[in-house]
Amino acid sequence: MSDITAAVDEVAASTLLANAQSLLGTQSVSDSGSLGPFNASWGASAFFSGGSIDLVPPDIVRITDCDLNYSLNLTVSFDLSSIIPDFCLPRVCIPTPFGRLCTPRICIDWPSVSIPISFSDVVRFTADFRFNVFLNSSSQWQVDAVIVGIPFLQLTPAATAILAAIGLAAAAILAPIPFIGPLLAGAVLLITATIGVAALTGWLGALLTPFVSGLSFTVYKQPQLFPVLPAAGPFDPAVNINLDNVAVAVDGSGGEDELVLTVDISA
Amino acid sequence: MDTLDSRTLSYVDCFARRFAQPGTVKYQITSASVRCSLHDEDAYAIEVRERRGSGKEGTQHDVTVGVKGGHFTVEPAKLSIEAGDVVMWHASGSSVPGFIVSGQDGDTRFTSASLEAESLYTHAFGVPGTYEWSDVGRSDIGGRVVVKDLDTKSKEDCEKWMRSLTEGALVTIKGRAEPQEVEVLTGQTVFFAVVDAPGITITDRRVQAD
Image (cartoon, rainbow over all chains, first blue to last red; front, side, top):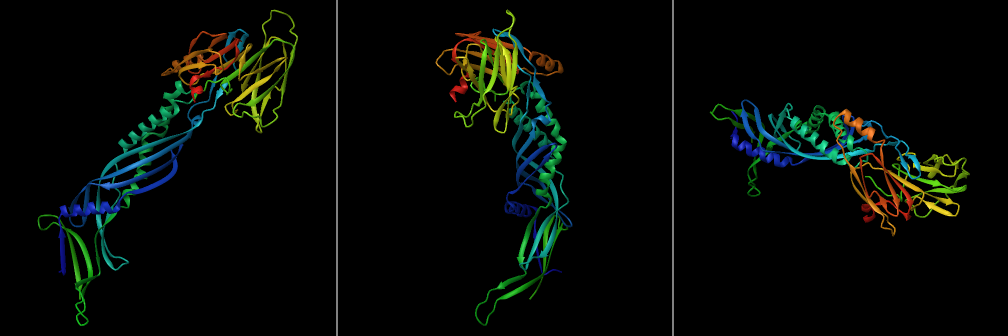
């Protein structure tokens, strides 16, 4: 039998979740690499919001419909000549007042281009957490909820939207390039097809999953030495008790699932 | 970006001049962006011989302008032509910075930056739109080039467009531009032949406004 027992219901646990999300704040990551055959650099920031707690005996805290809100700044760079074939204007000959004159064959060097994309979206997920109870380096009992496994992020709609955004931005950036006009639609199609929804979904997953995969938040923190009465004088010292052990479980035996904290103490 | 401005010859432009009198023509290629010459640019020579036979149309000779070691180069460096022949200068590629051809033909100075009689300027239009052009000098010579976009949805469309690129439009300038307006497709070339003008430029009004 434990010396102290405390319990919180699912509503109270959801408040704990909101506090934990607030403490986590916005996280950021930036990197560069390749996106299909193209060079890419990106920065992403994300924060969590929403979700409700579902307590599942004996030891699972399920966070349902939690939102991962993310913003993405992506720049895709590539040499246009890698996707558009070499193109030369043929000789043009016409009669002029100075006789029949011909321009030379003019070959077009396609430039390198950078396509910047800004994209924000929300991806909703459900994840299971288990408790990790330990005495931390500050001699405090700490109870963390730690994510179990990696939740599946449904990213195909976002990838499709990003690809459409890349297509639009590419069309706007390529349009002023001389001689590309009649080839523009094909070029944009080639760019989006070369990247592809599947590859973009995989890339987005690799970018966003780390925000979620290591997710943990502190549910409870308490110094091991618990003050019961403060000192009242030189001959009346403070009274403290020692928290010897802390355990957390989900208990559904009372009809309602509750998060139960049990503590063993000694004087 | 497609800039119509005969004062600066780019890789989509050509400048040509007919040399009517026998003699030696000296010319230089200079940068269009550097007003003060930083180097003593090499002067190239064109030997203009008496014309053999009459009634025969002049021959066109091409000179390719390149850049090497920070200097403009021309190929061929020496040219021998007959009176009445036309020499056409053009850049070897897009890496060649904007340039000007200028020289001395007998008593007459000529320059691509100011087109006079017997000279021709061509421009391949790469971006659709309406190009209102005029002379940046005192003349009121001007005109309009309408460059139409086209949607190449099929292979046939592409082939049709490619075939159309061998066609060009001619604007003859003889006191005024004739016709005043020409319509071409993206990628097509307009030839501006100056038969009689006081030394003009063919410059997009948007460039002049900048």
